[in-house]
Image (cartoon, rainbow, N blue to C red; front, side):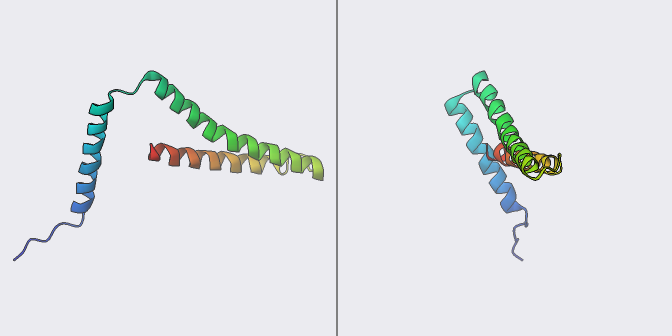
Amino acid sequence: MSASPEPNSNGLTKAIRVQRERRKLWHREGEPSMLRFVGQIGVLGWIIVAPTLLGLFIGRWIDQKAGTGIFWSAPLLLVGVVIGCWSAWRWMHQQ
């Protein structure tokens, strides 16, 4: 009887390889500076704020042209928040 590898062994091998590469990078470059962390927080904030403001701007522009109060502003603001949070989540997982 030959021992077949478990289905999750490939995932475990990949996780170990990623951990090893991160450790090598840390040894080579050292601890990230405080300015880098502050910069990442700033970028993360703008990733969320920019689409939110864009959605609000477009919504207000449509409302002014159509005379609809805040009919378009509120939904487009929420769409901007969702897009911003989704983008931030993707950016964090790529870092």
